[in-house]
Image 1 (cartoon, rainbow, N blue to C red):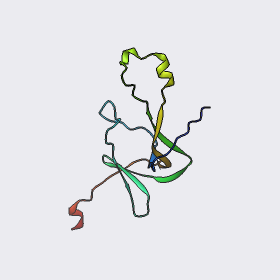
Image 2: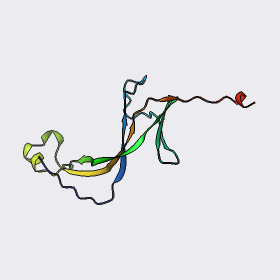
Image 3: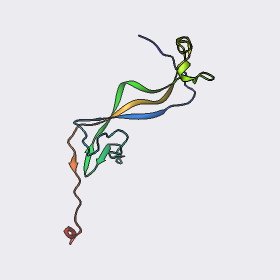
Image 4: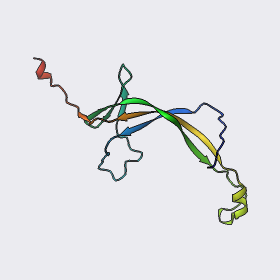
Length: 125
């Protein structure tokens, strides 16, 4: 196992992992980077996710071991053309990992989504 030591220069953001049961389907070929819904928290701190005309209720769970989201930054080689990089220079270059965020909790949505039904105004009369 390789150990990587990371020096934190600033406090990283805290992200949450979202766990859904089942699959998300879309008319688009790839949903990466698309807006799929709105995440909200009620007055008690319970999360709920609105996806289209459905709502999912979930719960917040602490992870046993936190995750770190790392971004790999390789140094830019100056004064060297990209097609002329030799193997010795790439071996000696230092790779720097920056901590983008920490994940200490996850939001679990286990129940089936419920449809959102709007109450009609005529029902009040």
